[in-house]
Image 1 (tube, helix red, strand yellow):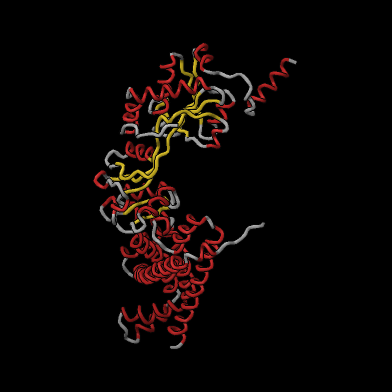
Image 2 (cartoon, rainbow over the protein chains, first blue to last red):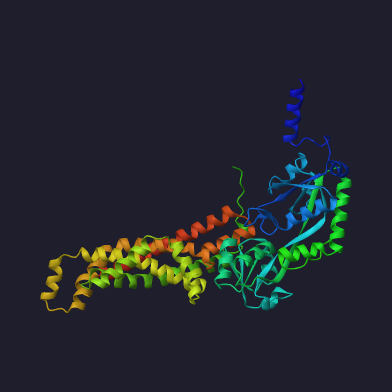
Length: 260
Length: 220
């Protein structure tokens, strides 16, 4: 009988039906002395496997900082974009730090902290081309992957521009690297990663198109933990440690983030 | 199966579509002219007496005919800038398509030239024609007549293959279609319209080639 109940519990956990089940709120984490944090390893700059086969990146550093500030041990769990919310709601991790954007649909399943980082899409290239209005790019060749946010945004902001539309991200980057376009559109984390692989080419931000803040996630009902994380983020912003981490991984300080 | 076609969003862009079709015709036209010239030259080299020239033409044909057109295009567009040769999308497309077509026409024309009976060439020489005259009147012209159908269908294949150059952002018909698709998300309608336009252009080419055959080879 007991094993049957256990079986049902496991099944319920697997299906994510644990809304009323054991919660691991702040006090439980402090009592246990361990915090389980889900981090990505497939998003370069935020979370990846470094040359020593160790997890590295901004999200990993922040997870370490969270555990340090909580004064507990860190148990890192690798998650992907698709399973990060299921891992959280089925109580496999306590916190998800994984460049997650806050949306009303996701907020039905989990709670979001204040933003701790910001991705942005923009135009990248030599610093000398930097502009505050895309129209100032004049006749410079702007490479974008066809139909993406950067294509649609630049087509609207600079309709007479010399926009060269490629099939995908890879050909757009190839066009920039071979000098076929003067600047190109992508996400800043892609540009940072490209800059590491191509140290001789300049990948300065030419124009910021749109910012998309990244939030941490916790289970519904764990308000104490959420409040603690918000305090942690606020504190880390004020004492400069978030800025330092962004400088380390992105090469530039933390952008101004809206609050949640 | 209750899809509602909405061609209006696509046909609103008819100016862009016609522009794209013109670029496709321009690409095809230029490449056919240069491809044919390269083909005649290549065939002359391959069937000629000089072994080094025969070998050069052979290597050219084998390299081009045994590698994908897309790869050739990327080598020209993304690769050549590394050694200082920077070509725009249209230039890169025209050069690559001409070189690619040239290899195929070399082989087609060579086949025609080799099909000319030895006795016909000897007849030309015994009439006192020079080497160049023999090649032009006794070999090339009858050879072109023999292989004209194969040549014409190779040209139509080229017209169809031009859609590949959208990959390097040359703004021909397919590129325009994909552009409209990315704005309207009317994929089915966009590509139906594009298909019809390619079909019309290919049939137009076929008709034009038939007319050329009639005027050049039949009415003599």
